[in-house]
Length: 148
Image (cartoon, rainbow, N blue to C red; front, side, top):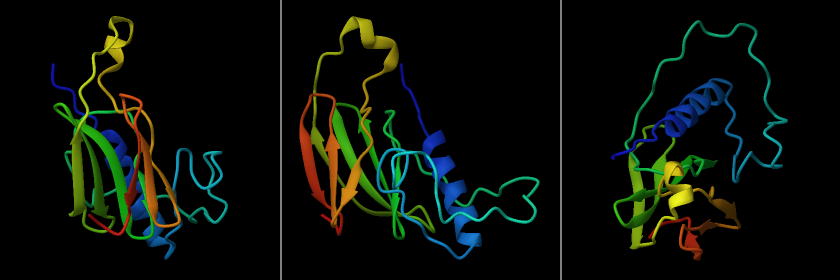
């Protein structure tokens, strides 16, 4: 069964477009945002909401439930492609891959969790120029966000 989870990336692209229209680039460096509460204090509601959003870009990233994060002009996505876990940096304006790295992360999915898919499920966290991930096999990894 091949699963695709592009909705989070499309949502981030839409959020990026709305925030860019306000000339703001607030960071969303971890799960549920800067304060882990799902809110953005610097957001000012537009006078009128558009009838519809125009997709700026779309990227196939692989499977998983990890939420993408935004720091500066980068969108970071942590996903699975086959037996590999993949950490990828995308340009927020274009969706083009800036860098990516992957590593083998085989594991045996517990039958009780099979309907939840092979992950990863943990959103990356950004701090002081580094990205931190927790993979499906329980490995914590730190990446230099500047590139590989």
